[in-house]
Amino acid sequence: MRARNYFVGAAFALLAAGMSHSALAEDIKIGEINSYSLLPSFTEPYRKGWQLAVEEINAAGGINGKKLVVISKDDGGKPADAQTAANELVSSEGVAMLTGTFLSNIGLAVSDFANQKKVFFLAAEPLTDAVTWAKGNKYTFRLRPSNYMQAAMLVEAASKLPAKRWATIAPNYEYGQSAVAVFKKLMSEKRPDIQWVDEQWPPQGKIDAGPVVQAVAQANPEAILNVTFGPDLVKLVREGNTRGLFKGREVVSFLTGEPEYLDPLKDETPEGWIVTGYPWYSIKTPEHDKFLKAYQAKYNDYPRLGSIVGYQTIKAAAAIIAKAGSTDTDKMIAAAEGITMPSPFGEITFRKIDHQSTLGAFVGKTAQKDGKGVMVDASYKKGSDYLPSDAEVQKMRPKD
Image (cartoon, rainbow, N blue to C red):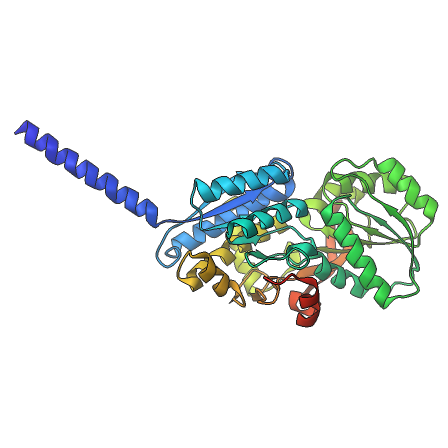
């Protein structure tokens, strides 16, 4: 009798194990890659954002009834490591798609991997225009507004400034090079009288702010375009304030209004810079209120722009898979081209022509309030209003 009970119990155990394995096989797995150890100020809020999205998706029944699982890897800020991580996620973990990346050169590396291996890739943060244009491919989509889009938003305000002599400061890698090139192009088209009198290219994450500030001051510009961010931005602002670089000069700055970069400046925040960013404290829309309430309830903290990017990346991935009704790559691509979905910033669409989303950005000015940096006079710019025509995109983007 004992032997019979043992075998019955073992049979049930094997059956349960088989059911468990079957249930796990039904999960939809998404691979996520980012520079967590290199850029925690952005990527930690980003991680919190996508974790909130996963929680909400699964609480609502998953994707077409299947549980969503995100498997995350750290690329350490190295393109080769990102490609290795992508390969592991696809070959060993069996993920349905790849998402994430922060630095533009890493986004391009993973995009190239996706193109070679025929894997769907939803780029979250990399901003270089090459992701969807010059090096765009069938398998790569991008969530955030690109350098072209953000430059066009900034040029709208910058072109109205009286300044004619401009200098630029940007990190010397794909993102910085792309941002400066497109800003100069769009600005010069609107203002042919502009002179570009100096360019400074400090290495990303390793700016020696003293010589940079001194060189720009010697060029005596009337306005400065800044593309530095993170610790480099803090060093540049501190040195620039000390040496009076910004006094009497207009400054236009990519990303500086994002809380992850603005908050560390504290009472050193320069006032009046024209910036893109995320004034979470002044956005009054139902979509954002819902996100803000959920985020604060879960983390007892305010969101950064990374939080929005992480959240919407996974929401977008889930919407694409749900529409496709499958994790087949070609079916997901077909579903993603032209898909429209809600976001904390309002409805967005992934364009069929170039796989770029129409998520927009806020443009405003920097100011100080209670010893802290804030963004004021901010307005939301819809991404769809700052994208080139289909005909222009076709000239820039390779044929699939």
